[in-house]
Amino acid sequence: MLAIDKLYQQVAPKRDASWKAPEEAPLEINQFSLFEDQPHPIDESEYLPFQIEAESVPIGEEVEELPVEAQPAPPAEEEAEKTDAAPAEEPVPEETEAEEPRDLVEAVLGAEEDEEEEEKQEPEEELTPPEPKPERLPAEEPEEAPVVHLPAQELRMPERKAQTAKLSAADYDLDFIPETRRQPRVLLLILFTILAIPVTLAGIVLLLIPTVLALGLAVMVIILGSATLVAAFSGFPKLADLLIVIGTSVIVLALGLLLLWLFVWFVGGAIGGLIRAVTELGRKWCYEEVPV
Amino acid sequence: MSKGWRVIGTIVVILALLGAICIGVGFITGGDIGDIYSTLNVRYNLIGHWEQYSNWALTTLKNIAVGVRGLW
Image (cartoon, rainbow over all chains, first blue to last red; front, side, top):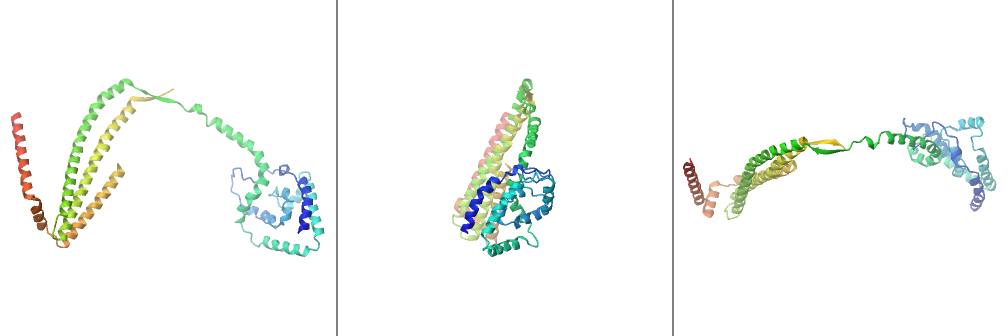
């Protein structure tokens, strides 16, 4: 294992120097991108064979084949056809230089081939299941996303910026929002004030009658209920009589509570509501919105 | 205000039900109105107070009637 590490460290600088950024990889039109709106739902079954291929590669070879993985859409056969058709687009020298450390490692570790074969056989058996699990696809897609789709995002961002610029210029123009202020109609306001004040006062006086009646009744009933409740504990010989008096006092107190709340409603709801309604009516009739 | 009506109504209904239950249990267990009245009359002199207030109300009404006739 120490020998493997030494060889790997010797070869690693060469591999890093020969590695090219995935920006130079050719961009396909229908390339999948996480950062763009998807007009149609993605069929996950299309990506299953590529997922199985990616899983079948040993761990040491994943880094070497990263530029090839930058094109997840075409399968292995299409890649071979593309290399024949357009060899300039494929990073060929990367693959040739990247295969050198693999040969060196295999040459040095000839005695340990049996163990490596056993290790390789185990992941192959694991990575070629009869039915691949589609549940693992969404979990592993984000790991590949930054390597594969960053060029596409960079190429398409100016278009989106242009779209947002068009929207901000056309739809969010603040000049179209009119600024208004409220201007009183003086004559109508004077007339309304002259008429509204007596009418409102008359309504308040009319509403004060039931208000005062409710308050008086509430006070009387609460006093009567309290007196009855006190009298219940003044010395009745039988518990049955005590229960009757207590029940009566509780009902009387409930009635007093209702009358007291009626008084509060007359003050806060009826009279206050009348004043608020008259004020709102005057604001609606005697003011107008004028653009500045 | 609607919430206040709901709360007050709920309290009033609960108190009324409680009082009704007490009165019903009292009558079922042998309560009597005559005994209650006699007990309260002995302790608080209900008849005397009732006569006193009724006389005051009649006197007041007579005075108001005399005043109205004088104005008329």
